[in-house]
Length: 158
Image (tube, rainbow, N blue to C red; front, top):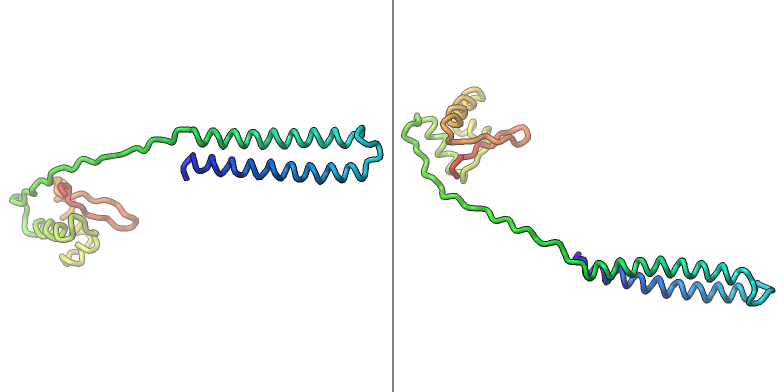
């Protein structure tokens, strides 16, 4: 919710509180008039006036907060623009067949694939896929990112 809307809401609540204070004030004055035998010099009238002023001061503070929120400047939105890098074409000349196959599988999956999925598709065990990915990572072709109990293998240039 915007500051302005919250401010109007708080002012509305403050106005309702003023109405409630005056309604209660009138009811209490009537009760004092019925129960107090001293007339207008009764101490209960003084107590009622103090309580009314305290209530009105509290409502005034709430009202001022509402006014402040209406006229306060909202925080500026921060816009972050990402710079798109041109995709570099992968140089696959220095790779052996298994490494090329891994790169092809990752490209087919839009540049990212789970390591476990690579193991299944290539029919290689954990140790074999780890060594293969270590070589590709050393050649800066792929990057492994930890996701829970799995690794996601991502092409670096995608």
